[in-house]
Length: 345
Image: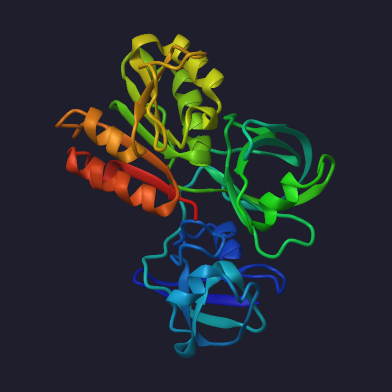
């Protein structure tokens, strides 16, 4: 099917297979179609059907409630074409300059490891290698699970068959309950990616601020790993604020400790406990990790310098946390153009 996108930048055209999501086809074709989550939650990939027809894949996608469906509004991430279509997109759609365009693939779950009572680390082995930037994510579709889910890579490699991901158990969460209730090792998943623009760019000047809540820390760990690899900490520093509920809910603290050892005084990691007051200023098992009490964006607000105008920030986590962190960063002088974020609802 031919899809014509009418945007502020003019017209763009691409081919979408009948069983393919319109958003994925356009991104695969190298167009900068708007999106954040790519899974039906954020609503950023909305479009209006001027002509043609589409089939809605997930009628209960949360972001559909925000649209004027009676006027032809759709989510491109939840729509497949049933004819040639002309779609109006309220954005400027241009050719992509990304280093790696996303594509469809498949992977096998090869390793699963419980990190806490409700957080799991799992690894996928891709059938074909993938190149991705630190901070990017993939969209996974599991057998018999309605809808797709987005997960950021914890690891970083210029090209690899192995993706390390982390998932938090959520009541009613289709994929998380599927993973937590049985051993899924060896199960095949559909993968689309890499996606996401909240990425680290080697050679970019300035210190870093990273703020994450829960499993949102995944992409920020990838960013820190890459920063350490490329020598960023020899000239610049980074401050990490990682929010969980209690001390027992912290995870990947061994990885943070290793990174602090590599970066020395250039890297500070603060674990913010929203539901608990820590007994000391540092973690009892990981002394390289500092402790604080409060919501993670409030802790960052208290500890950041008044002027952070020369810094680049990365934020990831639930939408309310991300919104709060962005307000804090802007309030401390970080330019809006240097605030990069991923919201996972």
